[in-house]
Length: 365
Ligand code: TRP
Image 1 (cartoon, protein in one colour):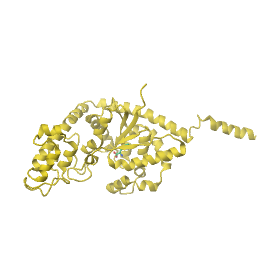
Image 2: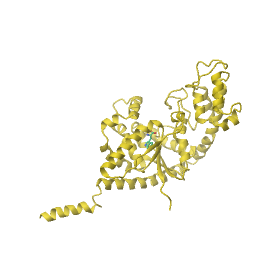
Image 3: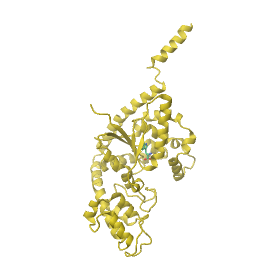
Image 4: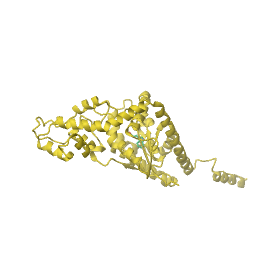
């Protein structure tokens, strides 16, 4: 008998290809976690959540479903270890959401910092869709349906986990101890928690043109690195440079290992030595960018190659998603059954209530 493993669940909205921010913030961690015998990991494509602000553009979600699946496989998320599935294929999640809705006030949803930021960013004209406003509740269903204890995500997801924990506590206090309280697993390093765009802005995205995607070709990566914001005061190589907000150095912090130095820039043993030289003066941005380009190619070449292999085998990707969804659905079905029982909704299996009524009315006569 296998010991009971702790459950990990996480997902991504299929609104575009995945980029380096996703990689250092969460994907890299998932590849590590799937090999840890203490855990069973589920990773899913959150197409229903993506629809909460893309209802009029379902084709975008449809198109990105397979792209995200390819990105998962390309970074090394392995379907023999991790169950990969599609949110919309698990209708039980919707029913759970409907019950949880009764446990959360509108005021609480309106105070969610992540929701507040997103509302500002998206400037919904014509009003905020109810589905969007309530997606934190649906996210609680995603997590609790699998009994997840850990959720590897970026730090912007912390308020959503807090909302999930509140729902779990409220549910359990009313209906009995059924649901599991989850915790975020954040990337250890500060820089990796929120990798900035190449222009230095906090948010990376396609419309901003400031992201490096996992599937980008070397020529694109090189161009993006050349466009990176560095230090506007560092005009000549001899000038002392500043590290704050210096994007190549931030990316090197997230990606460069001592092995990369040995391989591509043996003049320095590690990033600290390189930083010291830059601050002192005498190290040009060109050298820093060239090194970053070597490092990123080192990281991204195997990912790009694996992706190309799967792109030639789309049937495999579909079969994998279908099988994963079937597996995930069985678990969600079991949780929903326990939830319905706890809430007293299993009228036809519940002989207690039937008998209560029988005696209530037969005795009266
Ligand atoms: N909110 C996540 C994102 O924007 C996606 C998501 C949906 C998710 N449900 C989840 C993440 C459950 C972790 C757990 O990318």
